[in-house]
Structures are given as C-alpha cells and as structure tokens.
Amino acid sequence: MKKVIAFLSISAVCAVGHAQGGTNFVQSVQAYFTSFNTNYTFIGEKLDLETGYKQVTGVNAASFATLNYHVNDNFELGGTMQYSGVGSPINALEVGGGYGYNYYDTRVTVDLYGGYDWYQHTGVLEPKLEVKKKLTPNTFASLGMSLPYYIGQPFNNNPTFWTGVGFTW
Image (cartoon, rainbow, N blue to C red):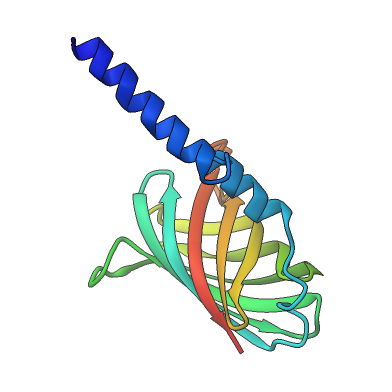
C-alpha cells in the first residue's frame, strides 16, 4: 500500500509540473544562466560590493566581503577580507586586480589577488575566476572558484568555491 501511495504522489507531482510548463529545477537554472537580459549591464559601473559564503580548504566554511573599483569597463582593482563568521576575527586579507568580460547582464572576471592568510600563517597568491549575473539593475549574484597558493607550503590542489551577492554603483 505504501508503494502505491508513493507512486501516486510522485505521479501527481510530475503531472502538476508538466501542466505548469514542463520544466524542472535543473531546466530552470540552465535557462537562467543561458539567457541574457539586455536591459541590465555591468558597463559604466565604478564600484561593486559583494559578500557571501566560501568553502575554503583548512578553514571549511568562511564568509567574505569584497570591494572592487572598476578602472574602466574591463579592468578592476579590489580588496577582499575573509572571516570565519559573524563576529569572528579576520583570517585573510588580499588585494589584487584583473580583467572582466561583459555581456549584457553577465560579467566573467579573471583576477590575481595576493595577501596574507593568518590561518595558514603565510602569504597567499590566488588566481580567481568569477561569474556575476545581474538580478536587478543594481544587484547581482556570483559564483566563483580560485586555487590559492600558500607561499612556502606544498602546492594546494584543493580549489576554493564561493557564492555571493552584491551591489553595484
């Protein structure tokens, strides 16, 4: 009897999903990241402030805040701080810059940051790749990946992943 009820429940959910347009969550995400809103752009903006969650090797969950100054539509300079949570001390500070490619409401950046990591007790060089997507004319969501190199330590083959939200001016 339990199997029959489970089968009917799943069938009902599938039928409702199909009746509402036939898309599932994966298809919705794919459509969002492969469509572009021509009304939103990163071109002409001078500052962006971003905060979010980072999965860092050795620290595990961490929070970050980043401020970027856009020298022009493609080049940016910025700084970021990393901390283990609200009210915790800062465990890394970095400054750097990079190049961004803009396509309507999407910006892909390749950056190189450097600084000091108090958790690892050493300097760090961190190449980064980040994708930002506008949510509204002045807000965005981001996904990123980096591969930090801790100076004087063995090569780190564990990438750092993050997701964030931010504002632009």
